[in-house]
Amino acid sequence: MPSSWIEKHAVTRQDPLWRAFRGQPSAASQKQALVILQTLFGGLVNAGYLVANPMRALMKSFDLPHHKMDIARSFTEAEWSHVLHTLQTLPEGAQRQRMHCLLELLVTSGVRLDELARARHKDLRLEELPGLEPAWILSVTGKRNKTREVPLQPQVAQLLAAHGSAFMQADLHSKEQGELPLIRTLRAPVARWGKGEGGALVAAPRTTQTGLALSASAIYAALKVFFRKAAKTAEASGLDARRFEKASTHWMRHTFVRQALVDGMPIEVASELAGHASIDTTSIYSTQELARKIKAVQGMRARKREGAVG
Image 1 (tube, rainbow, N blue to C red):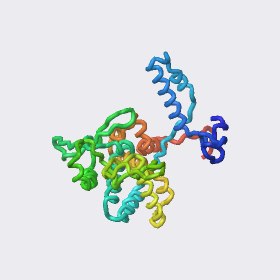
Image 2: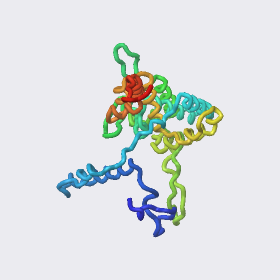
Image 3: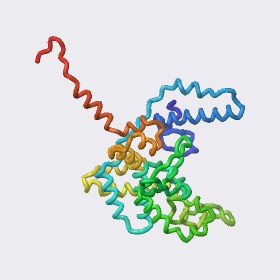
Image 4: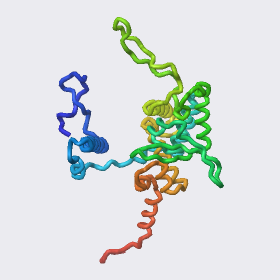
């Protein structure tokens, strides 16, 4: 990207020195921008404005650096124990109950943040199969508009029920029971500022209703606040506080996949539950394949060069 597109110093948008970028985009951002352009031209082709998509051929010629998944962004057993200990330090009530639900649901199912934010009651069903205990199944639609079914652990289903029980009376009057969200707000949304009579600025509440769907950004923010709280006591437990400060919702998804493989879950099952496009993505989390390679190399017979002594 040309340096003239990058803002060197923070200025207001009205300043002539303002630029759209703060630095060179990462490999992932570069790829996303190109994909957006390709999609845009594809729409023009479908609408009949163009006869071909020029980006389709150009995308193949771009030599972008590969975005490497950082699987170190996951919790160890000790770190997760600290997370649960921090949870117990929160005041008892609906907020701690919801946080408990979020933590356990994300770390035991591998669902993505936006998938959880969009989850509704209609996406849950109780499945009873011969020879198995009844299990709650959550259907989520993820990347590439692909729907997958994720079994929930019994304690997670109980946590969801406990979180939703606070809204039971209001839910009885809902005309769309199936559209009720799984993860919900505990208080009314922040009021919006607008112009009142005479042009004066007034805070206008959008609604006084609670129990609405908690957005993806709100879930992310709540967990970031919680992890920062965990960071404050991490060093006292012999842990790196910086890791908790960096932790986010995606850390729990990484933790789920890695722990599932450690616990012996077949890699193809873990891949399907996580909604990976390819089993190759899931294999990044597995140390078993690397251990197999190390064993193979270490087991090779040592070969001596001609003339070597010893």
